[in-house]
Image (cartoon, rainbow, N blue to C red):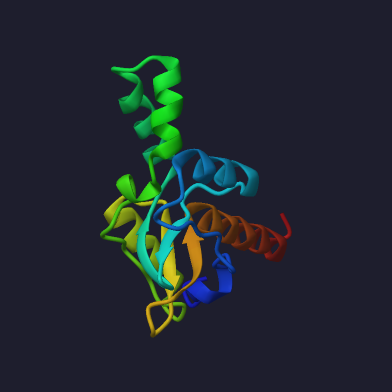
Length: 147
């Protein structure tokens, strides 16, 4: 398992959003596609990353001083660029999985965009990808032991 590379488990192609994508549209896309943290791409390059938590926090903070109509109106106009994390930790597809896991735990993040040598996002590796790999390796070890 320690020699497994990011490219072997990353999700690709990755679902992305643009900086001007309104929060409700991004939220609907994330729900529809079953994702939690799409990279934000501008002019073909990584501009940030937005998470379900970011969208949830925006909804709560907007709700504090607004009525239901105002909340809907404000959120319908709020672009993900106002919520996204701009300093994104990334990884190479040739990096080892152990390095991805260390980056994710060390930075307390759940998704790590995978970028090629030009800086283009070619995939994403998530906690779920790491857990699926762990589960597969544990099952293989059990089978070898005859459990």
